[in-house]
Image (cartoon, rainbow, N blue to C red):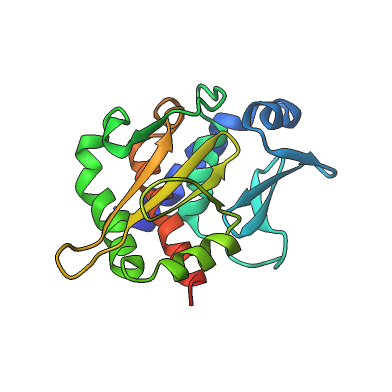
Length: 204
């Protein structure tokens, strides 16, 4: 099956999981804002999406009619429809600590860690610029680090150690521990990679 078909099926299943729930209940559980017209306001990085019931179709608030990537729709639906949506813990875990993450570790490193090091290892100012454009909050870690509210109940930190003549740059992406209870490991890897690629695009 083609990859786009996988995403279409994942979207269908995600919608089916929440279709019978009142939108007010979905908003309360997820932390997203309920607006008029059966609309759930779902910010995602530097975009604002509207999820409209009862069809549960996504619209871009700033560019009506703009096609929203299927992958992003699936991530949002998986978060909204998670079996448990506990409050953030304030405790940080590495990706490998998310249950089942070992299988996706190579993909996580390739999609998130390696691009982060390559683009920002010698460009901390660029990281700071991009993080500011993405509402990232500085945190005390590494040589530069920023915290992002990827989902209302899941914060993610990007940490960078600048390289020098002797050692290459190092980087990490860590998650509030609650992510291990909410996200599938593949979804966590994709969320991290989307964050890094947003930062790359906004640093230009």
